Image 1: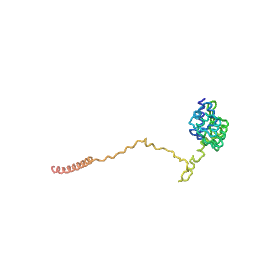
Image 2 (image 1 turned 45 degrees about the vertical axis):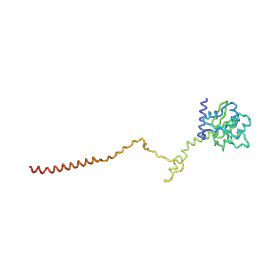
Image 3 (image 1 turned 120 degrees about the horizontal axis):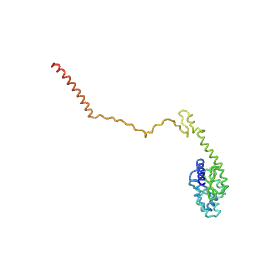
Image 4 (image 1 turned 90 degrees about the vertical axis):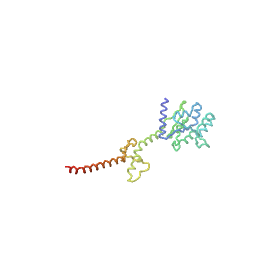
Length: 253
């Protein structure tokens, strides 16, 4: 059962990573209730978050939630809350309830712009944050940390994002090359439009080709020149000798 749960959580975090651009280390906002619960049951909150989210985390607590811990006068819970990074909520003069504080910090214009993961034991807080797309919710159930499945709003946003990715190349002329082909001759393509490459046979890799052997011109040596001159002189002498012998023979006869 633990392996199935871990696979489901990993798949959910992949959706948050691709659709809502979550990055490690994840910023986790904890409320006063989960700090009291983990302190009461001696549950290691940091290890539980790492094991559930399967990544490095950065636990944070708001000033209003910290004020709630001070009101309980539980020194162990207060010391545990001080270990986490303090998230400024600008409610120092007039502290608000944790549900109002977390809503103002997480939902900025109806979006989870700072990409917070909320760990809360309060059902009202989790119910209110389910309406905000892209907010992972974590809580503890019987000494086991559980992550809620994707809310309906998050699923709808993820589905629309996948549709846009699927049909973006068909409907957007910037990705089809229409703007480049329809432009007049000599005009430069629009910025951001990809350049179309012509398909055809590619040239071979020059590193894999065998180098051509260059024939070196052998310079004629002095000895060869002398031999050629000597052969010419011999031919000339032989011709003179034959011409001189012919008249003598004729007189003897």
